[in-house]
Image (cartoon, rainbow, N blue to C red; front, side, top):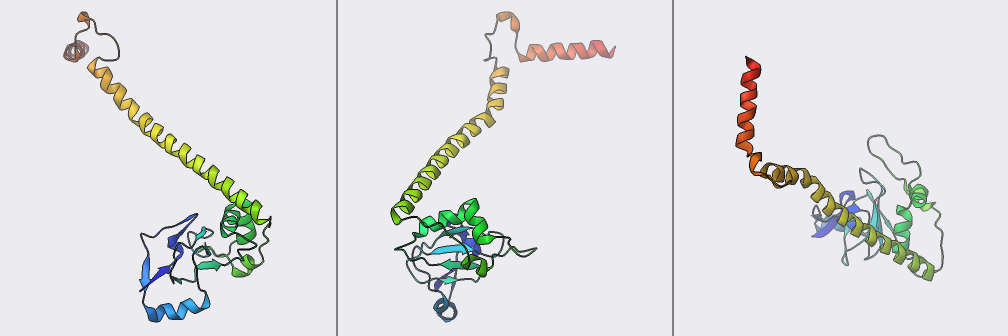
Length: 197
């Protein structure tokens, strides 16, 4: 059995493998010869809901690709796959590679458009530097998002905590003359009776 990569497995910067399916050798042999994905090759979703998502192949073994996934191989002496991946995700690169996507119900990226895409090509050293900076910024953004989510959880539970403290009398110092919630309920019931008369 061979892993069968479809558009639902491609996300920006990672492969979603919880829905991975497999094909038998006979079917694999009809697909694999036309494009032989290797570890680190670029996988771009060109059809469906995830159109434009791009990541690197994580498999160091033969895999089959559904036609909705575009395989991009680079000359790694000139173009680092990670650099191209991030370029495709940038607004300029996305437009360059996807252009005006065709289709109404299902969006598609046309292979001719991908082949005609123009990529700024700095030296390998510059490409590595750009990739490192992008990944550093992504890591900082992830850390900020994690802190934000932790604070949001605290903020979301804050009203309940305040109400809990309020009705336990923990928000302000209680005086002996304040009474308790039972006294307050008794007063409210008495006021209702008075108003009803």
